[in-house]
Length: 94
Image (cartoon, rainbow, N blue to C red; front, side, top):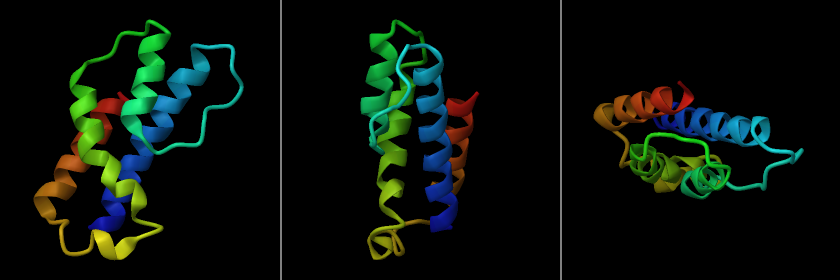
């Protein structure tokens, strides 16, 4: 289940970065997994999005460490959290 949460976080992250690139003149986005910081970049470009995405970002952000520190998540991810992560990532991608 941990890897599903990791990929959900990555889907959200890549989608947010795509919106930033599409709506600005920059050709690269800073290397960060911090979804709230990335959402701030979208807001700076005056692009509207649902503010609840900041809450989603808080839930998804910890899953970005999975590939570097897998032992930090292994005991704390259950089916409910996995479904929640996928749902939140789907909403951000849309």
